[in-house]
Length: 112
Length: 114
Image 1 (tube, rainbow over the protein chains, first blue to last red):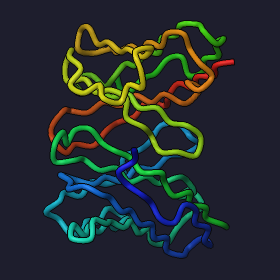
Image 2: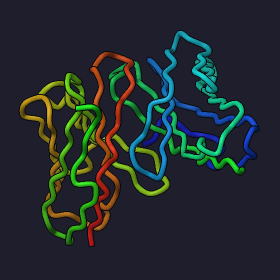
Image 3: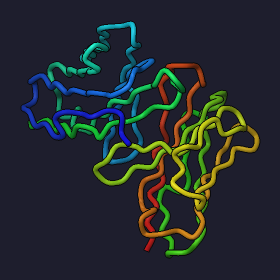
Image 4: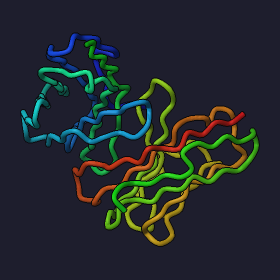
């Protein structure tokens, strides 16, 4: 069964706007990661946040983690058409942190 | 190599046939993972190798699925007596094997069982 649940399942915004995707999970984690997938093939690692961290930035990406609520958010600022993709959160559990459990993903569409 | 390589990129097979999917990880990556992804779903964990041994095979759906990594590098996922429900994209990833590390994924093999 999937550990993470992304919300919304699909998001469509105008180029230049900010996109926010959320992820909730069920069990305690060692870390949480976000991945992007284009065209249903290989996933690309975007950012990793550890359980003792609350916020991380990477370029136009900002990730937050609230372990008390078992949730994370991914913010993409100043979106571009090239950001159109599916975004997945994945959790590394405390037991067996190397095995990632993926959510169902959010399909993001950036309209020019 | 520069990235994770998976072959073939596409495989069409008849129901009941045997298939092998190959994954060539990044050189030096000790951990290797197989996932399966159906249309519109997230990747589903199948098996994870640390070196030559399967550290966790709890995601293999049944005994028709088997994977090996005999020399701690290339891995082969083997599916016997394929069924139409096995149709999916099979993704391989590798990592340095340290706790909490990110994965590098291959482009996947799209398996279609007809």
